[in-house]
Length: 263
Image 1 (cartoon, helix red, strand yellow):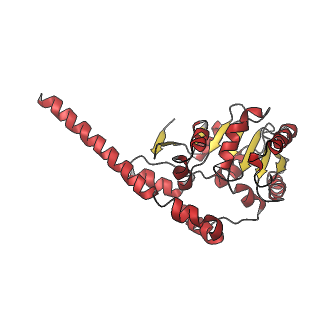
Image 2 (cartoon, rainbow, N blue to C red):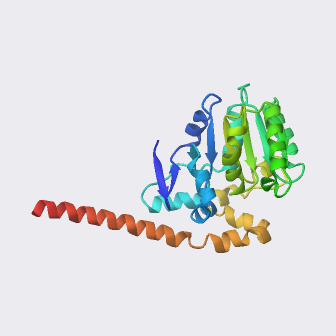
Image 3 (cartoon, rainbow, N blue to C red):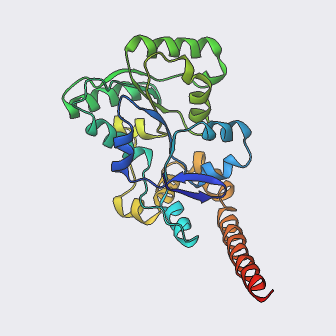
């Protein structure tokens, strides 16, 4: 499988069609979808980094990462954000009876609304369970045990976790071995809110040009200003440094080859 290196994070260079085919009920896998915010956090958070190392598929969530990959000369063929992947997944497997989804995340009632809407779209109960965990649930072992029991009792084979990064990725890594029937784990961020209809996505032209972050910042400035305006600001400089390092390696390789010819 072809991979692209962005700031020492490997991105699987798959199309959405290729990824969906790999996520069949027999094989399954853990899927994370990094964006700029993820890449910046991964260099500071060891537990988050360990979570990423455990993933089976890491696919690009951001058009900005696509631009960066092109600049580095290793273009990512397709952006696959969780908010696109998840609806594509349940539509792709809507007639596969072994695919049964559990939704974990969102504010109160969001997961239940998303469950109803999705089941109506596919005309079957593909989403068999949902739960909106309370704030701080990841630090409450009793609450986590309750969630594990709910998911196992639901009969779900697919778990979509939408509680934000890095919380969702860390939680999947910590508890994935406790699920008896789950084959596919999807870290989907705000996707449950989109599916519930309580949060709107950016216009298509903004998503395609890499401006979705600006739309979300305008919608939720208090929550997102630090992430987008401060935490992500070093990204461009780090990509430039990666480019310079790679250029230097190529120059050194050419000079070494010429020296061997001369000697």
